[in-house]
Image (cartoon, rainbow, N blue to C red):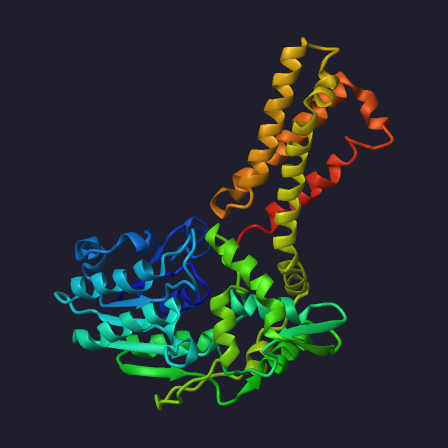
Length: 423
């Protein structure tokens, strides 16, 4: 069969795509930036597209030509600079359903449980709108509502589980007693495979037959990482509100933190399924982890995950301060240049370098600009070091170490670049 997968570069989408290729299907993968996915999965026909811009039926007509099935694995947690929930999860899907009425391919929608206290959140209201439209469309379909999905790779909530599990000495958790149901990402791929084969239609929840507390699930991940058990400290929700607020602000700048308010609200009531009978089986959390033994790279990832935002914000503060502080005393800041150029030129050069530092310190906070800002930091740092070495080499011996102190900044910038990718 000829199958189109939306969000094929994501955590669930990449596994579903690989499974359908293994089943012998011709798969086309849609993603906003599939360049790396094209290298990893060359058997898939990759197409670049942004669902938030595909809001009319005509935007889908060429993509749907000769398709037997469309699998929607795309989604976002919360509105932000990088995501538009209404456009991506609802409006684009309604346009897809309208375009699909002529050829009537099977539509598989990977959704979520949209009822409960968190049901009014935009994340779930947009999912629900798309689900209801699909159910009423008359198109052949499967709406699949998985619980918390675990897999060999990690993204979003599963990344946070690993990071919390690797916390040193103790495990600080909010909503530690919230119930959580899980399943393996391979279970989702199996359900999609069965739907494509014609064995599954309708609207189903999917979860393993166990309910763990969040604390128990984090403990399982800690054991999986090979770390000794640690005591759980339950935190009152109000203590985490500043972190949630900062995560939401980061979301507005394009960073997709699993600590945003949507995730916290969902976790406050737990992740449960309605247990609608589907004939599907799902893998327990312990079995999922046991089937994918951890390596040292998993431990590195877990330990670095919560350090990453601190590294980015620390670099931003360093560059902002290095640009703003000299502006408070331009005369003394420009004095280093006076032996080599006129006073006006020295002042102009000092002002230019300050503005460059401020621009880089600001740009690194904006996710789409972060990589270019980090590369700019490296370039400027090496230019500063080279220029100072040529013009005033004695600065290397200065007791305050103005040049020596630049070296840790360079190493921190390289670390940020190495951990910048999200998937």
